[in-house]
Length: 282
Image 1 (cartoon, rainbow, N blue to C red):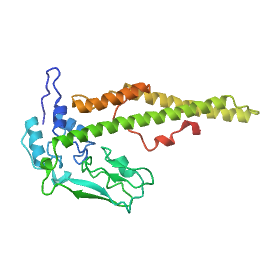
Image 2: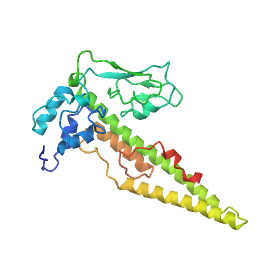
Image 3: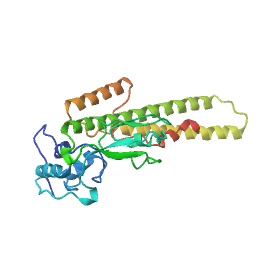
């Protein structure tokens, strides 16, 4: 399956136009890590148009029309078309682990560590990605659209809001990672400075000090390489967006500029191990 790409200057790419037809639930049921990767796979002929349960039969028809292919039934391996559901947390069981917050692709869950979390139903896309990580099984998906399924259960306005929140979250994750890296770098620099002025009284102490210095300097060099690679990466999924989304992106970039931070790829999210990679602990 091959698809022609538009060549006119300023024309949205095929992937852009396919993405605009997706519901932006970011549920990953299609087998890809979000709506954009699925759109790119369809545009390059690596995926068919029948892998999006939230979009349902209507979505398949829309995607197929753009691709110039015949609509196929929804791939049963990807799920079934059904009424849209919203996540609901049982407050009596929630232990405040924050795993659901980390899993939500649109920041529709609020709360803090060791405190009860809650779902903002107007922002929840029904992706159900928060259900599996919950260690106490306190999250239920509650249908909220009656018998309506697919695009009858989800509007373009809701899709646009979900897309904006998805992009906003990715920018936030990059900012938090960079701020954390900056804190670690400052701690490492302070540790190195203290180490260099620390008196030594024996060859063994001098050797130990040299080893610590080498470890810290190596960690700082890796951090600089990581920051340079991130700064050189071009942000994805930030072209041909709506004015509202572009306003959010511009505001985020303005904040980053004021902080003296370079442009980083929005899909570079902080790793749970980042806080453990503290060179100042060497």
